Length: 312
Image (cartoon, rainbow, N blue to C red; front, side):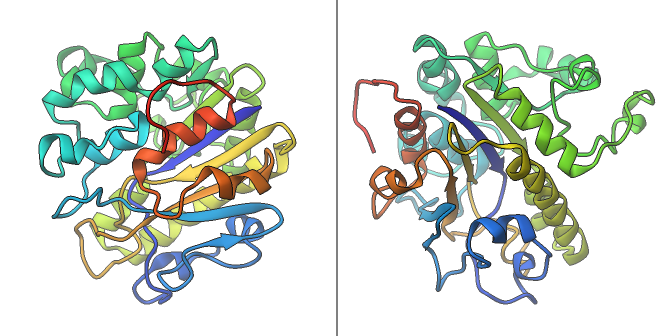
């Protein structure tokens, strides 16, 4: 079994109101195809179809205030309630005292120690590596997890070779960053590329942060565009995936884009979508009141890894 993990930053379950929630204004045929034509809303938080299951995850983690990326992503990728550990939500990068937690328990390291091959599919330009050399503590949880686990981050060379995917999905921003030789691709091609990576790796993660950026901007047209671009990539994933031996996972760290009335994050639940790889098991994998900390244990159980400690 393989896992293809699509992480959308800042996507919650909100109102079924296209004037407020761009998910209901955007054309999202790929995700709707998995969910029987539906989309999750605050009145329809759980969706079960022949192809997929969608669950709400609590992103507040029992802590007051608005969820943030640093603590939310730490919970999502380590299984530890980072907000409770430090007594508040914190972001965009993880609080300094969380670094030992990330080093010890991040999902990349857990999989490596279990003999599996994890991969972070995002490609980074040289200016990122220059920044990272000086400011490692201010990087996201995903990048810190890879660096702490000895997993090389993908470069422009990997992107050119088809072994990585741009954070903007289509490569549209790379010529402006000094890489005129990197040509634009379609979202569907990016999705097929992600599926191709699962041939060599057991766990492939792609991170899409433009959803969070669009939520902060409160720009409806931008929000619709980034959602439709992601859905185009998802269409390529669905088309290329053999769901008999691959599980597609999609989730987020906190709400934001689903409510354009505010430029801040929200306390809404976030979606966890699971498709393929034995869908009838998913209801047994996800508890009724699941939160972000459940995700690593779901990953390890799908990959059939015996992990000691508390399971969600």
